[in-house]
Image 1 (cartoon, each protein chain N blue to C red):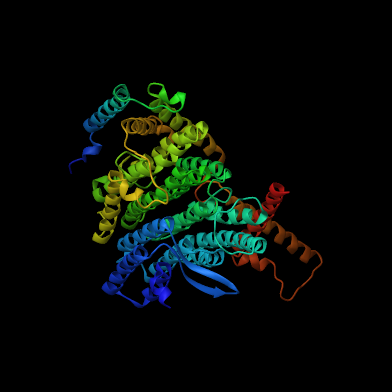
Image 2: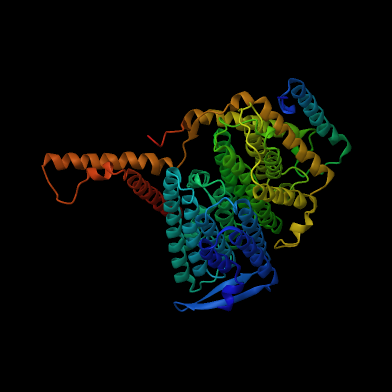
Length: 79
Length: 553
């Protein structure tokens, strides 16, 4: 059976390249758009990109650490 | 009786009672027609109060219609219609009947003009939603439903105490905006918040909803929490405490969803997260914020039902719900996958979807009020929504490693229901004015400015990048996460077993033989679950009373 497009090695590479191009474009678009920063920090170049990225990294790491404390086997309540 | 014919809530409740007597095509036509009738009747009603009855010397107002209640009735009817379409061929009559009574209860709460009738329908919702959970007819759903109803009855008791005290204080049963400044209004606020999934009793939602059947969860996701949002919108707008409660719920939902392995439990946690956004809006309390909260409730009900229909289709076709068992389903379930992805984009507030035009009103209202920290947290949370629901759900179910499962797309009616709500998500995103004209206050907000679109895309796409960079840290494990329900599932059990054991020893020590009191029986007959619940509830009640008296005196 032919492998699905999403699962071919070649398309995974294409997807990554496409993703990086789109990410770069969204940041570059800021040059052509007038932002209307209400808070100072909003006006920094690429603020939303950096903030989105690091906020998510922070949340994943926090979840991982919390996981050590509160994760239990999924039959925890059954026994 | 004229009133019940035109009261959309009573219409649904009565037709719910009729459903078990119908079969086949008749039942299908009936369940599709009734929500349309409810929708038509609410749009043909004029604003104001109607349908009042005398009860215990008070005047109950069953219909109090304004643009806010009409907005909620509209989206409730749409959900009943689409949910019924989704399962009209597959679901049992008992489940559909319970779902109709549940939805009718929710509509009646929304229309209620006084606290007494609000309370009656509030409790009806609790009972009917438990029946929806039990309709799955599994051992897990029986136990989860039991825990669910006990929590909701507890909430009902708190609410009733509040209402009784309120009526005693003010002499009026009218439901209007209140201030949380007396024990009565505090109790009412707590009762409302419990149904919204607010801390500390958040666990009931993610515990119970995923145990319902593939279709039951679709109904459950729409009514209880959103009715709570509605009563908070009406009863406690601008209560500052709600901003903090909402922010807590937002991040609680994200973190727990990140830890979760069950696809429907991920979506259940994200309900709490999304309701958090609405609660923050209610707490900010400006016209823009309240509009945003109401609009977000509207769009949320639609895309959450869509996501749960997509997950429900996967469950229906494969019988599996754990991310560790799923993956690669896009290859054989393209329509389910695409509809699920549209729902995921909408919940993440991508431009051109419904979430974008509603959530940004809440965010904008924090800017207008110069609340920098609230704004920063809301932005971080928006990125987090994409992380925990927007990518995580579709990625682990439809992509990631190939699980080897090759189920087909679900039957025609299920596909149609998903396509209907997927289109709704996009239409509302393209034409936000359709939604804005229904909102309680006039809208002076343009979502699609170049700056807003670009910054939102940056926020979301880089959050997506973070997901794939951090993927090794998010490997799915066969685990659950501890929550406040530990008190009534584990701690209560340990304490009650300990007490019974000690009593049994005493009994032996004194060689007492009570003819009817056989304590060991409680443990032998698997009554430990009930004992555990009772003990847990007592602990919670004691903690509640202590903290309430600490706050008030």
